[in-house]
Length: 303
Image 1 (tube, one colour):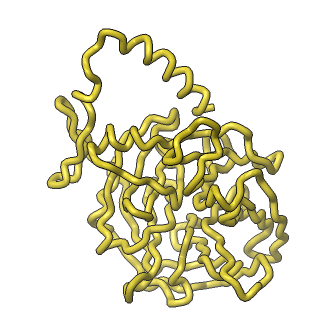
Image 2 (cartoon, rainbow, N blue to C red; image 1 turned 90 degrees about the vertical axis):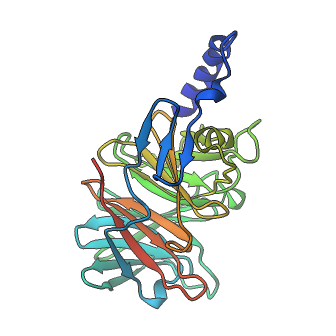
Protein backbone atom coordinates (compact mmCIF):
# COMPACT_ATOMS: atom_id res chain seq x y z
CA UNK A 1 0.00 0.00 0.00
CA UNK A 2 1.27 3.50 -0.82
CA UNK A 3 0.12 4.78 2.59
CA UNK A 4 2.26 2.26 4.52
CA UNK A 5 5.20 2.86 2.21
CA UNK A 6 4.99 6.59 2.86
CA UNK A 7 4.94 6.04 6.64
CA UNK A 8 8.13 3.93 6.40
CA UNK A 9 9.78 6.49 4.15
CA UNK A 10 8.92 9.25 6.62
CA UNK A 11 10.70 7.38 9.45
CA UNK A 12 13.78 6.78 7.30
CA UNK A 13 13.91 10.42 6.21
CA UNK A 14 13.96 11.63 9.83
CA UNK A 15 17.26 9.83 10.42
CA UNK A 16 18.73 10.72 7.04
CA UNK A 17 18.02 14.42 7.45
CA UNK A 18 20.04 14.81 10.67
CA UNK A 19 22.89 17.23 10.01
CA UNK A 20 21.84 17.80 6.39
CA UNK A 21 21.28 21.17 4.73
CA UNK A 22 17.81 22.72 4.46
CA UNK A 23 15.84 20.64 1.94
CA UNK A 24 13.79 23.70 1.02
CA UNK A 25 16.73 24.95 -1.03
CA UNK A 26 15.89 22.40 -3.73
CA UNK A 27 12.13 22.73 -3.79
CA UNK A 28 10.45 23.03 -7.17
CA UNK A 29 8.99 26.38 -8.12
CA UNK A 30 6.37 27.12 -10.76
CA UNK A 31 7.57 29.15 -13.71
CA UNK A 32 4.35 30.61 -15.08
CA UNK A 33 6.06 32.16 -18.09
CA UNK A 34 7.27 28.84 -19.54
CA UNK A 35 4.58 26.61 -18.03
CA UNK A 36 7.24 24.33 -16.50
CA UNK A 37 8.28 23.27 -13.02
CA UNK A 38 11.80 24.46 -12.17
CA UNK A 39 14.50 23.28 -9.76
CA UNK A 40 17.96 24.88 -9.42
CA UNK A 41 19.41 22.20 -11.73
CA UNK A 42 16.56 20.79 -13.82
CA UNK A 43 13.65 21.96 -15.96
CA UNK A 44 10.77 19.51 -16.29
CA UNK A 45 8.14 20.04 -18.99
CA UNK A 46 4.54 19.14 -18.33
CA UNK A 47 3.17 16.13 -20.15
CA UNK A 48 0.08 18.12 -21.17
CA UNK A 49 -0.24 21.79 -22.07
CA UNK A 50 -3.49 22.69 -20.34
CA UNK A 51 -3.46 26.16 -21.86
CA UNK A 52 -3.79 24.82 -25.43
CA UNK A 53 -6.40 22.11 -26.03
CA UNK A 54 -6.15 20.33 -29.38
CA UNK A 55 -9.95 20.05 -29.58
CA UNK A 56 -12.96 21.20 -27.61
CA UNK A 57 -16.65 20.47 -27.79
CA UNK A 58 -19.58 22.51 -26.46
CA UNK A 59 -21.96 20.19 -24.63
CA UNK A 60 -25.78 20.27 -24.71
CA UNK A 61 -27.50 22.36 -22.06
CA UNK A 62 -28.74 19.32 -20.13
CA UNK A 63 -25.09 18.51 -19.38
CA UNK A 64 -24.45 21.92 -17.82
CA UNK A 65 -23.61 20.22 -14.53
CA UNK A 66 -21.40 17.51 -16.03
CA UNK A 67 -19.38 16.07 -13.18
CA UNK A 68 -17.53 13.09 -14.62
CA UNK A 69 -16.43 11.35 -17.80
CA UNK A 70 -14.71 8.15 -18.89
CA UNK A 71 -13.34 6.91 -22.22
CA UNK A 72 -15.33 4.34 -24.23
CA UNK A 73 -13.79 4.43 -27.71
CA UNK A 74 -12.20 6.91 -30.11
CA UNK A 75 -15.56 8.58 -30.75
CA UNK A 76 -17.36 8.20 -27.41
CA UNK A 77 -17.15 9.22 -23.77
CA UNK A 78 -19.53 8.07 -21.06
CA UNK A 79 -20.47 11.01 -18.83
CA UNK A 80 -22.67 11.82 -15.85
CA UNK A 81 -24.07 15.03 -14.37
CA UNK A 82 -25.12 16.05 -10.87
CA UNK A 83 -28.85 16.36 -11.24
CA UNK A 84 -30.12 13.05 -12.59
CA UNK A 85 -29.24 9.35 -12.13
CA UNK A 86 -28.36 8.83 -15.79
CA UNK A 87 -25.40 7.71 -17.84
CA UNK A 88 -24.97 9.65 -21.08
CA UNK A 89 -23.13 8.16 -24.04
CA UNK A 90 -21.67 11.18 -25.84
CA UNK A 91 -20.38 10.98 -29.41
CA UNK A 92 -17.55 13.39 -30.17
CA UNK A 93 -17.47 14.28 -33.87
CA UNK A 94 -17.65 17.82 -35.23
CA UNK A 95 -20.16 18.36 -32.45
CA UNK A 96 -20.82 16.63 -29.12
CA UNK A 97 -24.08 14.71 -29.31
CA UNK A 98 -25.84 12.65 -26.63
CA UNK A 99 -26.25 9.37 -28.46
CA UNK A 100 -27.94 7.51 -25.62
CA UNK A 101 -29.32 8.24 -22.14
CA UNK A 102 -29.23 5.31 -19.68
CA UNK A 103 -31.13 5.73 -16.38
CA UNK A 104 -29.67 3.77 -13.46
CA UNK A 105 -31.57 5.14 -10.45
CA UNK A 106 -34.94 6.56 -9.43
CA UNK A 107 -35.79 10.19 -10.12
CA UNK A 108 -36.36 11.89 -6.75
CA UNK A 109 -36.97 15.48 -7.81
CA UNK A 110 -33.89 16.51 -5.85
CA UNK A 111 -30.30 16.89 -6.95
CA UNK A 112 -28.95 13.34 -7.20
CA UNK A 113 -25.30 14.35 -6.65
CA UNK A 114 -23.56 11.72 -8.74
CA UNK A 115 -19.97 12.92 -9.04
CA UNK A 116 -17.98 10.65 -11.35
CA UNK A 117 -18.07 7.56 -13.55
CA UNK A 118 -15.68 4.89 -14.79
CA UNK A 119 -15.83 1.50 -16.47
CA UNK A 120 -14.08 -1.81 -15.83
CA UNK A 121 -14.56 -5.09 -17.69
CA UNK A 122 -17.70 -3.80 -19.39
CA UNK A 123 -19.30 -2.64 -16.12
CA UNK A 124 -19.94 1.03 -15.32
CA UNK A 125 -19.43 2.43 -11.83
CA UNK A 126 -21.05 5.73 -10.84
CA UNK A 127 -19.90 7.45 -7.64
CA UNK A 128 -22.30 9.11 -5.23
CA UNK A 129 -20.96 12.03 -3.17
CA UNK A 130 -21.88 10.25 0.09
CA UNK A 131 -19.53 7.32 -0.58
CA UNK A 132 -21.86 4.88 -2.32
CA UNK A 133 -21.02 3.25 -5.64
CA UNK A 134 -23.59 2.27 -8.27
CA UNK A 135 -22.42 -0.85 -10.10
CA UNK A 136 -24.15 -0.95 -13.48
CA UNK A 137 -23.74 -4.22 -15.36
CA UNK A 138 -24.71 -4.42 -19.03
CA UNK A 139 -25.01 -0.62 -18.98
CA UNK A 140 -25.34 -0.20 -22.75
CA UNK A 141 -28.18 -2.68 -23.23
CA UNK A 142 -30.32 -3.75 -20.25
CA UNK A 143 -28.71 -2.21 -17.16
CA UNK A 144 -28.63 -4.23 -13.95
CA UNK A 145 -27.88 -1.95 -11.00
CA UNK A 146 -26.50 -2.67 -7.55
CA UNK A 147 -25.81 0.08 -5.04
CA UNK A 148 -22.72 -0.72 -2.97
CA UNK A 149 -22.27 0.96 0.41
CA UNK A 150 -18.82 1.86 1.72
CA UNK A 151 -17.55 3.24 5.02
CA UNK A 152 -17.08 6.64 3.36
CA UNK A 153 -19.79 9.19 4.04
CA UNK A 154 -21.14 12.64 3.25
CA UNK A 155 -18.32 14.37 5.14
CA UNK A 156 -15.71 12.72 2.92
CA UNK A 157 -17.46 14.12 -0.18
CA UNK A 158 -16.36 11.44 -2.63
CA UNK A 159 -15.93 13.08 -6.04
CA UNK A 160 -13.47 11.03 -8.09
CA UNK A 161 -13.49 7.42 -9.29
CA UNK A 162 -11.34 5.66 -11.90
CA UNK A 163 -10.12 2.26 -13.01
CA UNK A 164 -6.57 1.41 -11.99
CA UNK A 165 -4.93 -0.85 -14.63
CA UNK A 166 -2.11 -1.77 -12.23
CA UNK A 167 -4.20 -3.26 -9.42
CA UNK A 168 -7.22 -3.89 -11.69
CA UNK A 169 -9.38 -2.24 -9.03
CA UNK A 170 -10.95 1.21 -8.66
CA UNK A 171 -9.60 4.32 -6.94
CA UNK A 172 -11.93 6.71 -5.09
CA UNK A 173 -10.82 10.25 -4.19
CA UNK A 174 -12.29 12.20 -1.28
CA UNK A 175 -12.75 15.94 -1.74
CA UNK A 176 -12.95 16.72 1.97
CA UNK A 177 -12.18 14.68 5.11
CA UNK A 178 -9.47 12.04 4.77
CA UNK A 179 -10.95 9.77 7.46
CA UNK A 180 -7.43 9.06 8.74
CA UNK A 181 -6.65 9.46 12.43
CA UNK A 182 -4.06 12.11 13.35
CA UNK A 183 -4.00 13.56 9.82
CA UNK A 184 -4.51 17.32 9.31
CA UNK A 185 -7.83 18.64 8.05
CA UNK A 186 -6.13 19.71 4.82
CA UNK A 187 -5.05 16.12 4.04
CA UNK A 188 -7.03 14.39 1.31
CA UNK A 189 -7.27 10.65 0.78
CA UNK A 190 -7.64 8.16 -2.06
CA UNK A 191 -9.03 4.70 -1.31
CA UNK A 192 -8.92 1.50 -3.33
CA UNK A 193 -12.19 -0.27 -4.11
CA UNK A 194 -11.71 -4.01 -4.63
CA UNK A 195 -13.81 -5.02 -7.64
CA UNK A 196 -13.93 -8.70 -6.71
CA UNK A 197 -15.04 -8.23 -3.09
CA UNK A 198 -17.08 -5.10 -3.76
CA UNK A 199 -15.56 -3.26 -0.80
CA UNK A 200 -13.04 -0.57 0.09
CA UNK A 201 -9.66 -1.47 1.52
CA UNK A 202 -9.41 -0.16 5.08
CA UNK A 203 -6.21 1.88 4.74
CA UNK A 204 -5.99 4.70 2.21
CA UNK A 205 -4.12 3.96 -0.99
CA UNK A 206 -2.74 7.51 -1.20
CA UNK A 207 -2.67 10.57 1.04
CA UNK A 208 -2.42 14.08 -0.41
CA UNK A 209 -0.58 16.46 1.92
CA UNK A 210 -0.80 20.22 1.64
CA UNK A 211 2.90 20.62 2.47
CA UNK A 212 3.83 18.66 -0.67
CA UNK A 213 1.97 21.18 -2.84
CA UNK A 214 3.84 23.99 -1.12
CA UNK A 215 7.13 22.22 -1.74
CA UNK A 216 6.46 21.65 -5.44
CA UNK A 217 4.87 25.01 -6.33
CA UNK A 218 6.25 27.36 -3.65
CA UNK A 219 2.66 28.60 -3.39
CA UNK A 220 -0.30 28.05 -1.10
CA UNK A 221 -2.51 25.43 -2.74
CA UNK A 222 -5.89 24.45 -1.30
CA UNK A 223 -6.47 21.13 -3.03
CA UNK A 224 -9.93 19.55 -3.26
CA UNK A 225 -10.02 16.48 -5.56
CA UNK A 226 -12.83 16.55 -8.11
CA UNK A 227 -11.61 13.75 -10.41
CA UNK A 228 -8.90 11.10 -10.64
CA UNK A 229 -7.41 8.98 -13.45
CA UNK A 230 -4.43 6.65 -13.88
CA UNK A 231 -2.30 7.27 -16.95
CA UNK A 232 -2.47 4.18 -19.22
CA UNK A 233 1.19 4.41 -20.28
CA UNK A 234 3.17 5.73 -17.29
CA UNK A 235 0.69 4.70 -14.55
CA UNK A 236 1.13 8.11 -12.95
CA UNK A 237 -1.95 9.21 -11.02
CA UNK A 238 -3.56 12.47 -12.11
CA UNK A 239 -5.94 14.29 -9.76
CA UNK A 240 -7.99 17.34 -10.68
CA UNK A 241 -8.99 20.14 -8.28
CA UNK A 242 -11.57 22.81 -9.04
CA UNK A 243 -12.56 24.40 -5.70
CA UNK A 244 -10.38 27.36 -4.64
CA UNK A 245 -7.25 26.34 -6.59
CA UNK A 246 -7.92 25.00 -10.10
CA UNK A 247 -5.08 22.66 -10.98
CA UNK A 248 -4.00 19.20 -12.09
CA UNK A 249 -1.67 17.24 -9.79
CA UNK A 250 0.52 14.43 -11.10
CA UNK A 251 1.64 11.69 -8.69
CA UNK A 252 3.91 8.74 -9.33
CA UNK A 253 2.26 5.39 -8.65
CA UNK A 254 4.39 5.19 -5.48
CA UNK A 255 2.80 8.39 -4.20
CA UNK A 256 5.36 11.12 -4.97
CA UNK A 257 3.90 14.45 -6.09
CA UNK A 258 5.73 15.09 -9.37
CA UNK A 259 4.08 18.24 -10.69
CA UNK A 260 1.19 20.66 -10.25
CA UNK A 261 -0.15 22.53 -13.27
CA UNK A 262 -2.50 25.45 -12.67
CA UNK A 263 -5.61 25.87 -14.82
CA UNK A 264 -6.85 29.12 -16.32
CA UNK A 265 -10.38 29.65 -14.98
CA UNK A 266 -11.24 31.63 -18.13
CA UNK A 267 -10.58 28.49 -20.16
CA UNK A 268 -12.13 25.99 -17.74
CA UNK A 269 -14.70 27.59 -15.46
CA UNK A 270 -15.23 24.51 -13.30
CA UNK A 271 -13.22 21.42 -14.32
CA UNK A 272 -14.92 18.35 -12.86
CA UNK A 273 -14.16 15.33 -15.06
CA UNK A 274 -10.92 13.62 -16.11
CA UNK A 275 -10.05 10.55 -18.19
CA UNK A 276 -7.49 9.14 -20.61
CA UNK A 277 -7.74 7.16 -23.83
CA UNK A 278 -5.43 4.12 -24.12
CA UNK A 279 -2.79 6.16 -26.00
CA UNK A 280 -2.66 8.81 -23.25
CA UNK A 281 -4.92 11.46 -24.80
CA UNK A 282 -6.42 13.49 -21.96
CA UNK A 283 -10.06 14.59 -21.75
CA UNK A 284 -11.25 17.15 -19.18
CA UNK A 285 -14.90 18.14 -18.79
CA UNK A 286 -15.95 21.42 -17.24
CA UNK A 287 -19.37 22.55 -16.03
CA UNK A 288 -21.20 25.53 -17.44
CA UNK A 289 -20.88 28.56 -15.18
CA UNK A 290 -21.83 32.26 -15.28
CA UNK A 291 -23.13 32.06 -18.84
CA UNK A 292 -20.28 29.87 -20.08
CA UNK A 293 -21.45 26.56 -21.60
CA UNK A 294 -20.15 23.15 -20.49
CA UNK A 295 -17.23 21.80 -22.50
CA UNK A 296 -15.11 18.74 -23.07
CA UNK A 297 -11.46 19.52 -23.87
CA UNK A 298 -8.94 17.21 -25.51
CA UNK A 299 -5.21 17.46 -24.78
CA UNK A 300 -2.66 15.38 -26.69
CA UNK A 301 -0.03 13.37 -24.86
CA UNK A 302 3.50 14.79 -25.26
CA UNK A 303 5.67 11.65 -25.08
